[in-house]
Amino acid sequence: MHKTWLSFVLLLAPAAAFAHAGQQGLVLLLPTEIYIVSGGLVVAATVALAALMDHDSLHRLFRARPLFTVPAPWCAGPSLISTLVFSACIWLGLFGPYDPLANLMTLGLWTVVWIALVVLCGLFGNLWAWLNPWSGLFRLLSGPDPTPPFKLPDRLGCWPAVLLLMAFNGFGIASVNATDPRVLAILASLYWMFTFVMMMLFGAQNWLQRGEFLSVFISLFAKISPFRRDAKLQVGTPGWRITTAATPSLSLAVFALVLLGTGTFDGLNETFFWLVQLGVNPLEFPGRSAIVTETLIGLAVTNICLCLIFYICVWVTAPKGQTGILFRRQTFTILPIALAYHFAHFLPGFLVDAQHTLVALSSPLGQGTDYLNLGPFFVTTGFFNTTATVRAIFLSQAAAIVIGHVLAILLSHRVASDYFATRRGILISQLPLSAFMIGYTILGLWLLATAKGA
Image 1 (cartoon, rainbow, N blue to C red):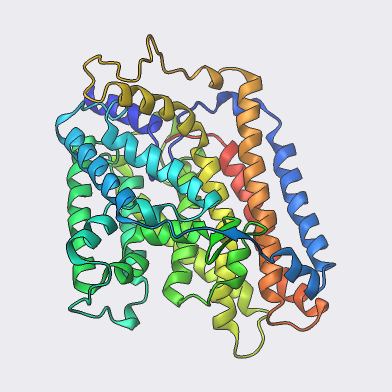
Image 2: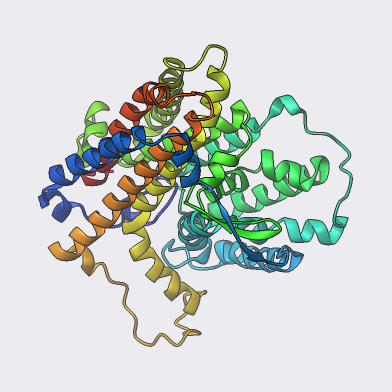
């Protein structure tokens, strides 16, 4: 009985598995084929439009404009507050309600940070750089710019972050304990201590920028934001920072692709299609524990295949001797797709679990207190039961997917303009990548609409 209940909760709670909180029945009754085909056609039309743009037009499209001078906002205060909040969540995870939908350890990690904060950073910039729970305490204890005792080898690149990201996603997708507040509190505490020690050994910024996967994760999505603060606040077309970014290392390029590959597999592994391939009856799903090995293998194979396919798409038309650098730069152009899918895949779960988070904030110990004065408050999932609201949710998801792919197409053409002198050269170079992105649009929309069994 306990396992059955926990499996049900895992379907409702947002986690690295991108679990849907809403039923898919009404979604399947909508004419989703129309939306899927239309989304693919919009992206194809964007390819045609981008092909008509010359170098100057592409550069003007992603040119930022300075607005006004703003003071440097970084200080230890927000990070120290974040450390205190994190500590409180750890305590609640260990001693608070066992129900994941009533415990701020689970809700804070998966709903507030993994959904809300990530999307906000994609829209407004790297808020995590001020809010992470390490920087403030590190600066308080070590001073503003201490010399670390060891140097992180350059050859390691961002591979530590890649490995940690894969481990995190593997835990979130495959583990039955992905939303258990006790387990999360223990693992989060160990990870906090590990990260702080690595910052002491190798330097705070060096480790956060190359080893701490959540900081690397959010910093990449923050490049999509139209805003950037240097001496002045600058604003431009979303993604303009990708066009001016330095060529990433191979490890950072792989990290960007893993963001997309993991999101794709997260959606795929819930579908009837995937479960049938594993020989599992989707209507009698035995639970995550029965397919842990298959899930981890599927996650690894999906990311490996995505990296190979993307490399081939670049290699086919890359100028001689520039395949590597062009591949690394083009990987950043898929970040809008990854962020769009992150938002779209999580939207149903967020609509439910944001309500649970509000209730948990009002009664963090689950003892009936009402600090926020909510009064009688009932978490509702009624919007999954009417055609109008389900259609609105699905169209919001579909719109995000299509907008992300449109932006990725334009960014890809802009990056290609740095390596091809003519409009014809850009167009030819973009044919494989454009086909890849059109196909990914259709795949992403299908994953949102298809039947779920896990």
